[in-house]
Image (cartoon, rainbow, N blue to C red; front, side):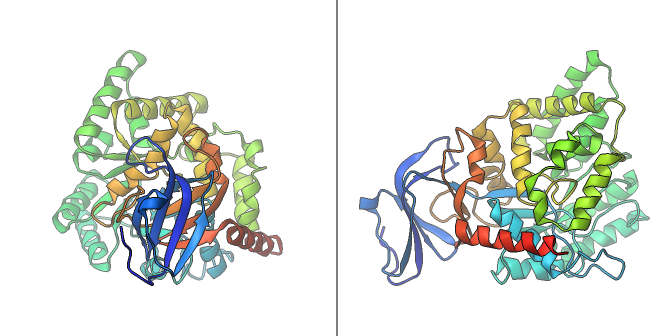
Length: 430
């Protein structure tokens, strides 16, 4: 392929490519990026590029698509008078950068705030360093919605304001949920998140909820049956999930924390806690010392095992799974929390390729009407991680990268480490 002369380009030379459109490795490739797109891939002898080029040596390294956080959060830019002191511009910008530092190049933000659409535009345009953002609006829940009419009106407003999807939280009545769902289908906006108790997972699936996050809706449904029935009911609800093209965002690590099944003392020692405000860290520690939540159970390990079983059976059946952690939440530091999630997905029977696929190609399929990304192919958005080992053999090597590219912008390991040091220093001096 002949590239446009004198256009600025970035070239990854002599690199092993993990394209993620199939389970293979393309060895000793040259990958050419121009603007925010991958424009050519092939052996060095078959590739030409402009004289205005930055060459990144990929010898003995692996180029993979950037990962996605499909249930993430972005702090508010205008939090209000009663917000914690740490809700400032530094917290917003450091949160966005932490995602990048760990190879997260796309975030589906699952709780919108006032002025956040402006922040989205600033990030997606490159004014602020951060992952590409797709944002849900402010939550639909029992406190924000008081009637079916209000639910329908709020859907219209979110569509007109430009949010990418609607966020469902607990507390909606069946009538309110149905009004939201019906109006969402009419105006052409998707909705995802939790399953309200009055709605139930079966009705949520049949109503066209695009993602069911955290698996809690499935857990609540299945726990109504005794052991002799549960296996058949699980198979039935999984089949219904597939038939209705529902995506699942498991958030396994966080949920084990919430239900009381985690090793809190080990989590208190997470190295990445140095990158968050002291007040946030203390909130995490306070929870660990006295774990209480609406999702706590009498037998947290049994609950956790059921969640693992659900994810395993879903994956075996071919249900569409998306990578996500609900960061920043309890001990889930943005970006780093993905790497805490991967072992839980592995423990649920997913192999390395399936796990990586849930954060790359599957995400591109989910957002296929918005853009082309999630694999390494010509025409795809240039969201990439240059990894120093083969993640198909060892997932942990994704943390050992030489740099991250977001929409064609390259952030070297040196630049990332320098910025991480600045964030650590900022919060250590609070």
